[in-house]
Length: 205
Ligand code: OGA
Ligand code: MN
Image (cartoon, rainbow, N blue to C red):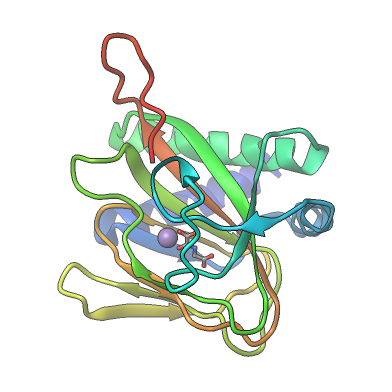
């Protein structure tokens, strides 16, 4: 298991180094993926907000998904956070990225839900460095993630598939979620840098 994870990490790092983003079709162990999906179903998901500190400035024009933050209060959440901590360590060791922590939320998109093209971080205004998206179910129709480059050219259209992981630099790549047809479950996460000022940890955006 540890060896498998290491091999997956090596391929992931090589593609990321060249492109600033990477899609790994088989990332999560299937048993963990299933446990997370079951855990998600237990959550009280809330209409997602847009803006700093998820201020619940709910803007249905921009996004329509429902979310719940992971806090490590169940075993699958703990295991997921452990896997992501290993990934954080790998990025820090290979690229000296200074990733400091990780926050993530479950998301559910039901029929017609979407997330318009956006950036997860704006240069100099956020401590979000890397975005991760884990897909917990395989979708037949709709809900594709489209990733664009800095010139707004389409780089990739990703069909959500269970166990898959997408990672990209948060400031560099605009992206959008096309309207869902089938229900779609994911975990969106962010590795953050510590932009502490006077010892106060920046809470991020
Ligand atoms: C986000 C996001 C993409 C997805 O939550 O910021 O872009 O595929 N999610 O769930
Ligand atoms: Mn996003």
